[in-house]
Length: 111
Image (cartoon, rainbow, N blue to C red; front, side, top):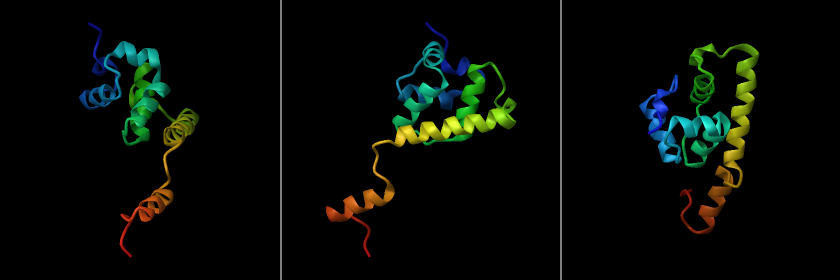
């Protein structure tokens, strides 16, 4: 049996449960996917995006403490995080578009 996800630095039972919902069940699977692909899978299963969780994952896979991320490295990770959020949201209706759809079918917000 492979090591659990919680054996990776910075990741605990909550991370392990979230990754399991995304179909990632072991530390080996997570390492093989890498931080970006694994985090994208989380987002695609409805997990709320959190920058700290993302960079804790990146740092953990590198064997570093979560708070080791600073300066330009943190800014670069923020850009990657924003790109992952955008990719996960591709094809989803925006709030305004969704409101229009709901209004057309008669279940939008009352005026």
